[in-house]
Length: 466
Picture 1: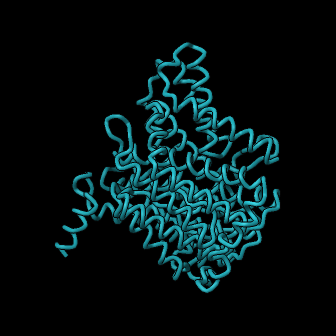
Picture 2 (picture 1 turned 30 degrees about the horizontal axis):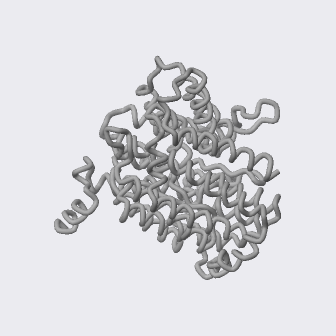
Picture 3 (picture 1 turned 90 degrees about the horizontal axis):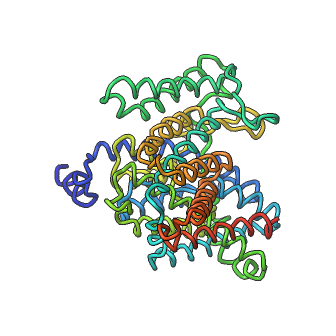
């Protein structure tokens, strides 16, 4: 056992990064529990595009497992990967339902974007782009992602809900599922506030306690069973169904590339994945201490390449764009600093494929037609989001341009419900203000190129794809 521990320590540089094996294992479990909702949610999303639910469920688990293992074993980053939320909606509702591509062609577009992603990563272009971003903007992106995932958590908990008149409003706090979410949220913050020993395990304790309370309430009060977490159930990840989606992207390449609109779709997939990943890795790298003194990602090329490989794997097995998950910050808060935690995530995704009912208590609950809540895991997103906004303290608040760009980045990230679009607005406003105040020489040429590309992306999205 000691030899195994010593080998893990050397390979993953655990002690060097100020971590321990137990922290990495707990961190990996925490990341997985915060991400596992993607399996049923992504399956349901792509089923609306005409794909088989069980096949997508299995493909999502397989892609997440392989991508997370590559991230852990190759890049040594504490980051879990899976099919991205938001880009799967673009896959279904824009590419398939609106532009009338077949789902096979949509998978082919994801495959092509993934291959381009790998090429860009190998050439080092992605590293050049990320390192060209000013430190203050990186901090703004990290804080913005914190607010963004907290907003997602509040939405997934039912504490905040949609409103026809005010867009968002306070949810129904009398609903049992929402009350369970509120219980978990209060518990995680109380545990964090008690003392350092308990606070380190606040998230994992809260997830397990909330799930247990929900299951118990469902057993004691049968009327609550439909709106409470449950254990057991049918295996939604039938491995045999994977044949319905596996390799279909290759057969659709010809028909995809024959359509002029396909190139705009491929560009959009590539663009969103690029900057979602960049924002996530910078935020995670900052919290995990993986940024060097110049604010650059340590071994960032490997992490970027692992993410690109995940997208290709996902397209081949039959799921939408795979990307680095900001939920990985939940594991970092538990002390994870190395790829061992991501390796744990990958292994658990394989386990979830075979024994998903064992993890079903952390899944989403359909409380109304088309309305899903995640009472067990939503509190983790809110809690981590609250911790991530601490990066705001390091921003230069004496620089008016930085203050304005920070505000634009954060507010647009939340209200557009997109990390990439928040980054886009922040970068565009930053470069325009620097030009207007004759501080153009302080800005890297790469930033000007990025701002121009963001504008082009908006033109494609809101003109060509309408």
